[in-house]
Length: 196
Image (cartoon, rainbow, N blue to C red; front, side, top):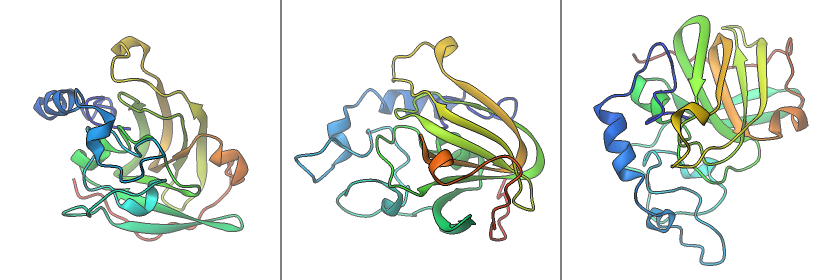
């Protein structure tokens, strides 16, 4: 996921935002405000505060000020509910500092062009599956089980993944296989545009 990780090389680079996020990440996961005392928090303090609660596997008090929109992407025999990251800031933050996702929920990154996109998974606290799609929804690349990092993982040890497309979907690790998402499969993606 994005943010401190300036994950969209070469487009996004470490910035003042990254520094601010890194400082916020110094907080504890308990600060995230999970109201479930028996379960671990679903986000750490450094997560994007506008993530839709629906995609998280657990409850949080209150609601985001300006929640990211949700879309449904049709896959073989199922529907994925995905938060839309369509501008630089939301793409950079992505699912950074999220600790649990609901099954068949995640994020879709929307870009202005169909090309190679590189992701640097700084502050991604859970392993993820990543799926790159062309504008017509055809899967070009699947990166399964991208390893998580911690907030103290050295930059050179943080996972990097790359693929070609206009969209990138991130789901919990193992979802791509269980949802039968494979290269050549075509998903039905609603009309989405990059904001920046």
